[in-house]
Image 1 (spheres, rainbow, N blue to C red):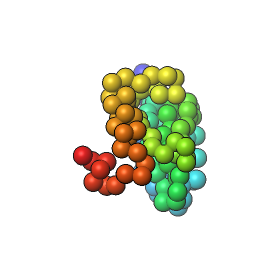
Image 2 (image 1 turned 180 degrees about the horizontal axis):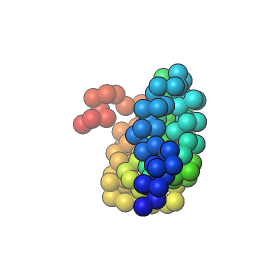
Image 3 (image 1 turned 90 degrees about the vertical axis):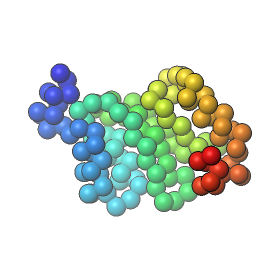
Image 4 (image 1 turned 90 degrees about the horizontal axis):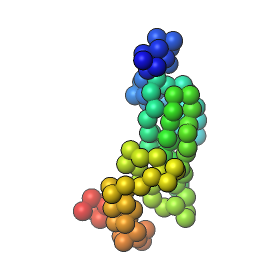
Length: 117
C-alpha cells in the first residue's frame, strides 16, 4: 500500500528514477546523488558505474534515501550485490560464491573473458 500511496503523491517507481536520472545527469556525481537521494515508491538496489577509475557504487535504497552506499575503491576493487543487505552483514551462498570467485581471480587477472567464465 505504501508504494501506491507514494506513487499517487508523485514519487516515481525505481525504474522511472533511472530514466529521469539518465535524462538530466551528464556525469557520475549527478547520477549518484539523484539515485541515492530522490524519493522513490519502493526500496531497491542501484548499481552505478562511471567512466573514470573508481566510479562505481552499489546504492541500497529505502523509499526516502539511501540506506547504504558501498563505493568502488583501490582496496575494494570489486562490488557484489545479490539482493541481500551486505552492509548489514548478510552474505548468503550466492554472495559468498561471487566474493570467493573474485578473490581467486585477483584484480590482476580480470578481463572481460575471465569475468564471464
